[in-house]
View 1 (cartoon, rainbow, N blue to C red):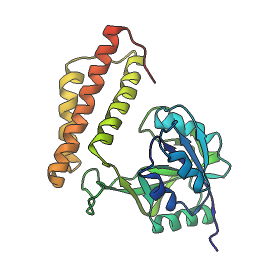
View 2: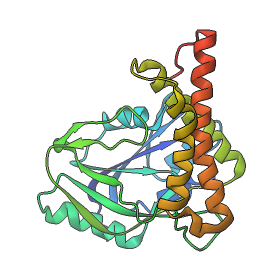
View 3: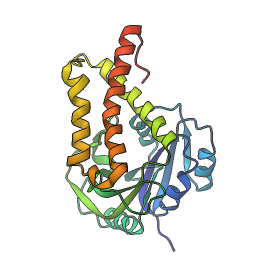
View 4: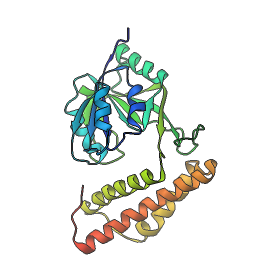
Length: 258
């Protein structure tokens, strides 16, 4: 008998038909799955409902905004954050069960995330090891972030879980470019709302170069051959796109989209 752990999964989706089933198959340890879907045009919501998930349809928005909406519907004492292009290994699922049942007094837990390129069996060296915080005790959460790539704030200490969170982060060139475009639009919105933001020499020229150097050398993308070069150029191009969108928005008097 598979006893479910008192954990709510918060999964944000938008046109993730190709990925979501693999993700949902790995979540059999959790008592509740909440999918916040950004009004997908494919079968994402239908597949999620087939796996017993509670699907909340909401206009597409940055992941952290969608997670805030999902958090309002959590019914379990713990919640776990996951993306549709990730899945929980068996060892990690067992570790989550043990953590919430034994209750060592931690407010949150980090996981080891291992990155793969879709279709490539060998994991990449880029950004490894990576330990994002993903499991949280509901009552200890002080603040959920509204900006992308931020971590919820908790009032207590944090621990770490055994096992890996597997991440397939480059499904296709088209999807990579689509996500790059979406997230740079979100980031440009943050910049436009920030009165301290300045488009000086550092922001326009040194920051993109710095991102390339940081990822290619210090985050070990250089060990991944051609793919590492692609990731590093992509991170530099991310900064260029953000700056360009800010410049154009200011010239045209456009308000931030997000």
